[in-house]
Length: 131
Length: 198
Image 1 (cartoon, rainbow over the protein chains, first blue to last red):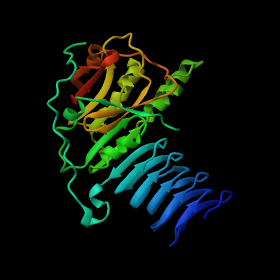
Image 2: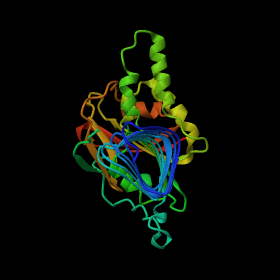
Image 3: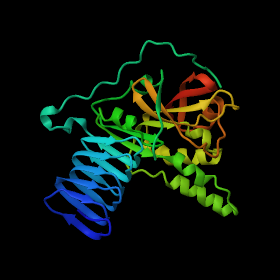
Image 4: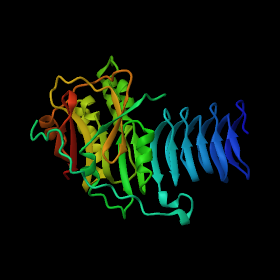
């Protein structure tokens, strides 16, 4: 854990799960592990993890090899890449999300994306032809 | 930011918005507005890149009382610059929601100028306008619940700069889109579908 009074500038890497409650600037590289940015965590860094959860504030790109979750207290500005991305009610996010559901759960779970349904044969209330 | 209770409203224009989508390609979507869980969840079924730019959040800064004309210009510039996309990004779908109702003609024109290089000939868009110019602002934030349902949540405080357009006005102002269909909704609001005009 990186405690609330700790500030790290540079690369954070290793082989264990990490909870960030302090400040990190640079990069967080824990490809095979869980990364949680706690409520008091402030990260200005790109994050790579297996499952990444944000309860605090992140400015930077986040890659989750399995998932990225932004919780209701989370605030992220950056780009997310993960097979599964979940935003909880109240989460604040600005940026892009790159999703590929066929990668979720590994190749064996891959399936074709659902087709967009054809337009229902339901008359609209009123089609307005001019302003 | 705790978001409020979600309501859903049927939309007969979402299906035609999606019907041209080629699922063999990665879909690129621009959502102008806050990222809502249901929108992310809906698009998570598809191979896509989803861009969220909450320009509504920038409106209080854009319309703050400025002492000097230069400050007003700087605020407009900052608003436009908040909307920059990587080169070679081309949006298949743009979800404007009711943004246009809050932009004066100059800012609307500048927004379209930024967006135009990121459109292709098959780009589609969705938004809301008004049928009567006396229509009050909806006070809602919008998302996609399903392929025929729009989700709505209360925005809380009203936003500054509300000066809505009707369909005729928008058709003249939207230089890179054509209004292909519109549907009159309750409260004299208008839901419309746009196709890129490049």
